[in-house]
Length: 209
Image (cartoon, rainbow, N blue to C red; front, side):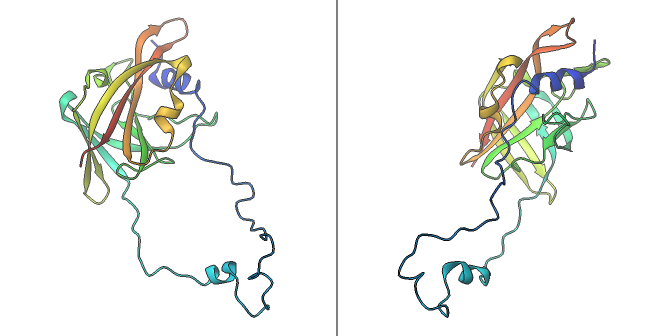
C-alpha cells in the first residue's frame, strides 16, 4: 500500500483549484469618459483624489484562524495544520496522517465562502483522521475551534463520493455567499496498480445559526 500523500495528490490534481483571479491590471486606474465633473477646474478634487485621503472610522477584526476540528459523531478531535499549494498548483495534503489540515489560502471557517479541510483516510499503519468521514449524515455537527478560543459549528448537509477524474472543484472551492465547510478525504476502491484510491469522499456542511 502506498502512502496517503500520493493518493490524495493524485485525486486533487485532476481538478484545477478555483482559488483566485488574475491580478493583471488590478493596480491601474484608467480615466473615465469626459463628464461635466471631469471638465471642472483642476482645483476641484475628483473621486480618485478624494478616495486617497479616506480612512474608515470603523475597525474590522479579521476572523481568527482555525486551529482544531471536532466531529463527535465519528469521534474526531484533531488539531489543524495550515495547508498551502503544492508545486503542481494543487492543494497541499497534511504531512501527518493523524492530523487534518485547513487550506489557509481559502476561506476561514465562519466567513462567507467555502472553508476547506483535508485529512487522510488511512496510512500504512492503519486508519487515519478522516477514516470514518463517509459515515457522516445530514444534521451531524462539526465544530471548528479558532485561535482566539471561539468556535463555530457547522451542520452536515450531505456526504458524497466522486470519482477523482470528476472532482467537483467548483462545488468544493467556489465562493459562496454564506459560510460553508467542505471536508475532503479519499475513498472508494483502492487501485493497487496506480497506488491510490479512485474516489474522494466529500462532506458538505453549512453554518448552524
